[in-house]
Length: 192
Image 1 (cartoon, rainbow, N blue to C red):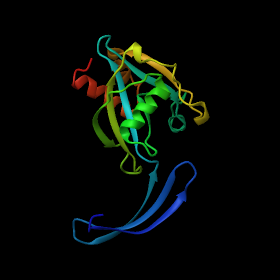
Image 2: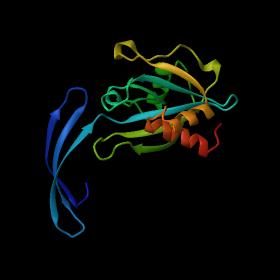
Image 3: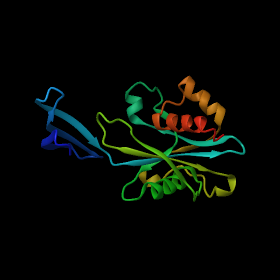
Image 4: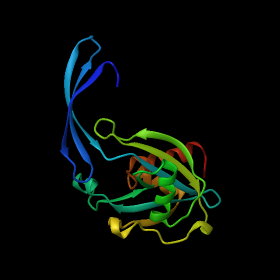
């Protein structure tokens, strides 16, 4: 921790699915005086996300699944189109994303490239997300994917034309931040 910040109290508000903390801390502000702040922070662990792309056919693999928070906040169907992602649990980011890719999309990939990492909602969530890309082809498809039924995953696998996916981002059909970031990365670096 910085010498300018001291956590004075950390209380668990919820430990149901992940952990929600109420944290009290003192903070040395720019006027060189200490202030007491009280904030909530949601700790859901760190994660990894990947954009699978086929440069020969200019196609990508995304997923579609129900996301309750979006439904609560006005997404009429609650369905979100996203890049494949998952929580690290106790895996390395690379091991996590290889495993999640196989479970969710049905593609068994071996070579992934980490392109960056990001705090996705630093004002309230502790998560760091590790961003990856990897090329895929039909020879890598070993199952239909769809996620793990025991984890109540009902994931639809989508193979999309890259230019159509970019248009879906501009039209608002794709609204997921991690997916938009990877689509922009692919466009900037001319992967497709």
